[in-house]
Image (cartoon, rainbow, N blue to C red; front, side, top):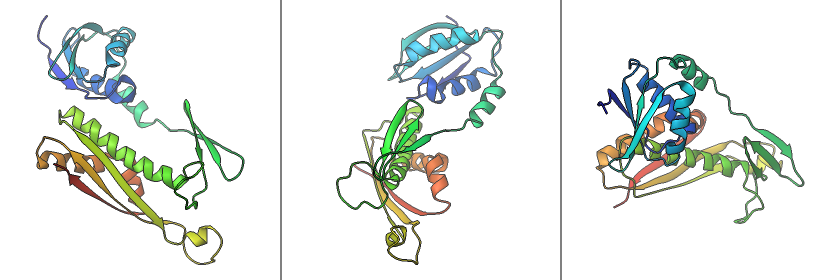
Length: 237
C-alpha cells in the first residue's frame, strides 16, 4: 500500500463526538485517490469508520495496530459532502432538553436518550433524593474540564495516570432564595476547587494542556462571565 499523504490523530474521540469532523478537515486538502491515515484509541471506531466511508464514497482500506493506537487507512473518493457545510452544521447545532415537573419539589429532565431527576437547590443534607440544579451545574463544570482535558491529552499522546476534580460553591444569600429574607441575592458567589492530575509527562506540557482546556471549555467560559472561578491545577507525583 502506498504511503498516506496526511495523518490525523483523534485520540479517544468516537465517530459521534467530533472525530468525523477532524477526519473531514484532514481529508479536504487531499486529491481523489490519495490516502489519509487516522489514528484512534477508541474501539468503536473499528466498526463505525468503515460504515461512514461507505456512506460518503471513500474507500476504507485496512487497519493495523500502532503505538498505543489503531491506525486506519482511507482512500479519498472522488465525490463527498462539502466540508464547509458540515462545519457550519456543527456550529449551528443546538442542544435541547425538555423538563417536566414531578411530585414534591422535583423535576425530570429529558435529554436525548437520557432522563435525570433534579431536586430543590436549597437542600442542605449530605444525602438527598435527587441532586439539585446547583449540583448539576458544578458537576457539568467539573465534567467538562475532566473530559476536555482527557480528550486533548489523548490527541497529543499525553498519558494521564489519574485525574480527579473537586469543586465547591456557595450562594451569596440562600435565605433570599428561600424567601426567609427580603434582601440579598441568590446568585452563586464563587466557585473554588482543585484539579488533580498524575502523569509521567512534564509539568510544562500538562500546564499548557490545562490552559488550553480552560480556553476551550464551553461551561467554564460561560460561567466565568458572571461568577468568579478559582480552580487550582495540581500535579500529583
